[in-house]
Amino acid sequence: MTSETSKVPAVDQALRMLAHLATQRGPVPAASIAQALGLPRSTTYQLLAVMQERGFVVHLPEERRYGLGVAAFELSSGFSRQQPLTRLGRPLVAGIVDRLAESGHLAVLHGRDVLYLVEERAPRRPSLVSDVGVRLPAHLTASGRAMLAELPAAQLRALYPDRDAFSERHRSPADEAPWTYSRLKSVLAEIRSTGVATEHGEVTEGLASVGAAVVDHLGWPAAAIAVTFAEGSPSDLVETASDAVRDAAATLSRRIRGTR
Image (tube, rainbow, N blue to C red; front, side, top):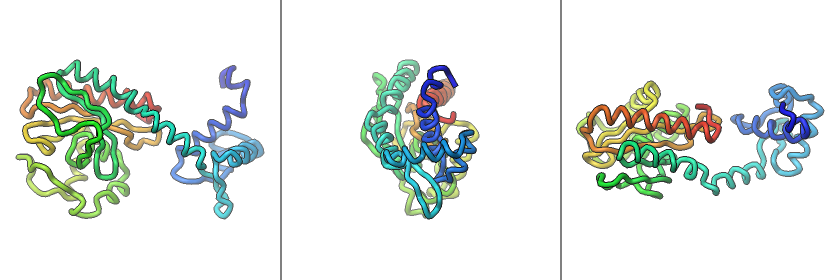
């Protein structure tokens, strides 16, 4: 503990408690909070009582557990309204575009779609269907695949319960069969091994993309950064673009205090 935080230990402890609750998959007992943070039980219950009164914590008496309250949700909503991903991500995407002279974007996962938040177009490059506010099927895009690869298996299966969940725009030459859950799992496994996702002509014929996921403090996909270029581009461009999106995604993850 620094000299500054030692002047207000209760504030430091309360913030640590909220941060701990935010990393849990669900409400937890007070005893486990005290143990995880190394706090006396009496202090833990006192802080929980105050935060419960203020709406930052909710108590589930039947389960004897505590979870985040509505006030904590309002803080997260305020975070979203201030568009930190857009503000923090735009300079990173712009830097890639300036470096590669290819168009770049930042997108978030919204159900089975990706939603584009940032578009930086390189001069004299092919026009793209993606733009700010546009949605595209996640499994067809490099940015979407990068984010899907970060989801737990149960969440992925819930998004794609059957073949009707998959849509297509253009059947690329590399496509040997319709999309299925098994095929998606195989694609995502390859992404996890390389840290970068690719797509070849499945969104727009003649164009390819590479993308990498930005993860949050829980390890969930918060966004993805991608670059689009002409199919058949030199291998050194593809390699450089892959490294660029991977590095930019890692940088943005660190800036939002992600796990990567």
